[in-house]
Image (cartoon, rainbow, N blue to C red; front, side):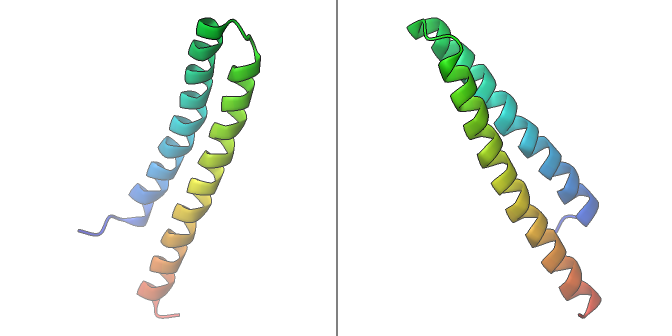
Length: 73
């Protein structure tokens, strides 16, 4: 079942937030476990941002291509 472009765009925002917040939370937890504050928090935050932005770019490209095909361009 195809979702509307608006719903897919909302999903992009949630996905981006998930990767960034998830990286920060995991990094904070690992920093507490290994007493490396703030090294792992910052590293996983940056990694989460990179993964999140790549995922957002990939999903946005899919939405644009699907919208273009639907419009007949």
